[in-house]
Length: 272
DNA sequence: CCGAACCTGTGT
DNA sequence: ACACAGGTTCGG
Image (cartoon, rainbow, N blue to C red):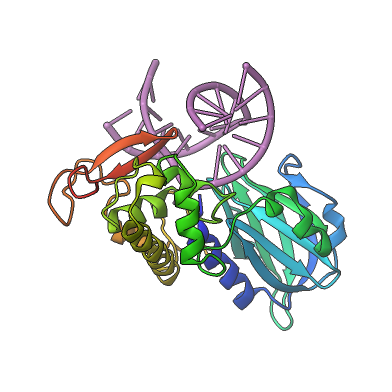
């Protein structure tokens, strides 16, 4: 699913296109993806959007917020009234913009791992999931703190990058890409990395996440943005999903290995 | 801490 | 038919 850059892209599109719209109606086709009181947002105006790691939060004027986690296959799609809903649409929001036609925002999710949680805005930061998140790699996390996280962990560095309690927002794609950029093998125990490697990785995490956001995220498979469009970052993958294809640095075939039960892509020669 | 589970779709 | 999928949570 969407990782930090994909969620950030949707967040920015909500700020650009939905702020000021009134929530005029909500239709629910499956209630098992919903937590909290759906009707609490009726009649409120969307005031902004925030992101906590991979969690999207949409705030409204009645101090009710929607926390949306898209997990693997969740989508939010903006549509004109009358268009066919995307497959596996579970919730539809009817929005009234200030001076145009009513619009729909559909929450769809084939696998139904994702969810929408309606709750008071003040309660968002008390959610166990939000409280448990580590620092934001593009905001709060410092190089020093990152070095400390590495030094304290014996686990494979890739597992550390994916641990949302340590660092919030990195997923499988950006972990693989940042490690390739840093010439670091994903299975390397975090604490045996040299200081130089830690610093390179820290810089490359920022680089891949920033480039991901600039390119509108990665649509390797199912990701679509709010407007139904694809991201472009998948066209720039160096390792993710490139099993057997030549490493663009040394032409060794890219390998797929399994670390922590997750498919992991790396160059066995230039990542040490 | 690691594997299994949660679900469905897609590709081999 | 089987392996695999961008994430998180739970249980052993």
